[in-house]
Image (cartoon, rainbow, N blue to C red; front, side):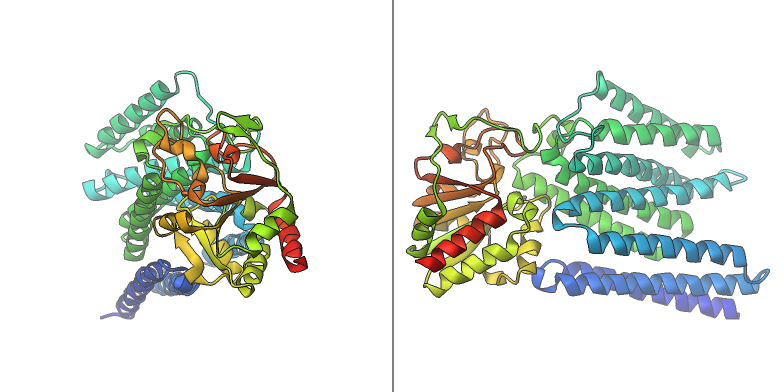
Length: 475
């Protein structure tokens, strides 16, 4: 075996080891207690794969015409710019903006995968084998849809002017989307029959890019986390296709893992909302966060309550269930809620946290946020485990959670009908900390706010919790 042959064999073993770390890392991300180490392990595996690829490139160049300074300058600059940008954004982004960042990363991943296939296709002199041809076309289509769709999804979560969080219905949009899909399918079949045509590939590319836009714009902000998860799955699939194009097993394995896990997460999120993925993709749900509703409803009027009154209820309760939501995340009030909980525990109060699967913006959002504040993992209870305990709960303290606590989900005809919710209204007393009577992403009034057992403490989550902590200490 030649030197290059030995290097290739060792590099493939390194790729296999890297792929193994991806699998193990993904398994460890299943629990908040091990997720950080799982992430580090996966990152180490990716570093190994990149270094091994660099060694292979050097060996191939030495076997050929020698080291290419230009090629290595491009590689080094690309790694520095991409890695530096990723490191900076990951360290500076707020937890509440993590879904937007994930969506941007999806766009980068899908776009990069599509560019690999485009470059490979432009270099062809004759039609490739059917296996490579299918992978190339699918890579370009899926990667392009992911790129444009993820940019729109990120813009919706950011609330940008041209991509508002509310559904944007394009005139004849569904017909346009269907027409684009037909163009992509017909063009792909033409290429798969052995034809080599750059113009046809260009048409497919353009149609896929527009398809990503027309598919994502009509979907409301409430469903955007599900869409981001779906697009994440698309990114993984595109990367796997790029692996087939380049005959790179580490890309195939990593892409397949991301694609499969993203698809599973999408299904779990849709189930948590009691809706099908198809229903979500049809779009039109949710008027956008912050829509202001009236202060009265069919169940009665809103009862405002002071921090001192709430403090008395909490301090002399036997059981308190805290329900964190997006409002807590926006206010970065995780440390404040932990301080209040520890103060109550010192007084003998049993404190638990009720975590809805889609509380916040992404699954696990609340878990990660509270773990950051060193809230004990055993106190974090999933919806199915905590719901039976609301009947025995003295006080349910809702902090910035809206749609996931709305009893309207139990009634037919509501936009949230059938969505599993936290049974907060079963508690003996309910306190809601909220800045205003603004609606959640579903764009409807929350019946919980007019429940006779509910007291509204109008305040920013961090300020409201600080006031409650001070009031409890003063008792």
